[in-house]
Amino acid sequence: MDAVIRPLLDPDRPAAGRLLDDAVGTGFWSFGESPGDLSFVAIVQEDVAGVVLARLAPADEPDAQTALGPLAARLAAAGGQVLHVHELAVAPAARRGGLASRLLARAEAEARSLGAAAAFAFGWLPAGRPEPDAVPFYEAAGYAAEPDIADFFAAGSIATGAVCPYCGEPPCRCAVRPFVKVLAPA
Image: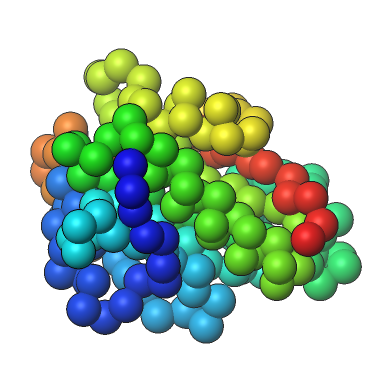
């Protein structure tokens, strides 16, 4: 698929937001405004066909510690940063064309160039549903699966009132599977 991968810009946000709402549900994601933002979009025929929300994060932040375990402590001791892939979504009509792989690779390359030693993502495991495509996708991209974490979104869904597309009203009972990848130096 002929696509341009570029940084997420303000004019891209409405279309990217619709993709993310469709993929993970309203209230379960945010664009955020972190200084380490490494978010990108895939543009196909002038339309946003895919988006990855990612950022550089200190290795000692709670999500990094949860996903990376002992590796986070080693990286934090050296003042290291990691890539946190928050969300990745591709429009249904553009799937199976490699856009998700290209978006993830771009975020990883940028993070690596800025000194990140590892990357992590939390693969959403919808309650009562088969494993989603994210599981084999991250494994094919070189990420190692860590043990599942039950009820990962419960507290957040209660705090924000986010309605899970699978569980309904809070609390969300979905689990996550952390995926971890060591990034080779640039």
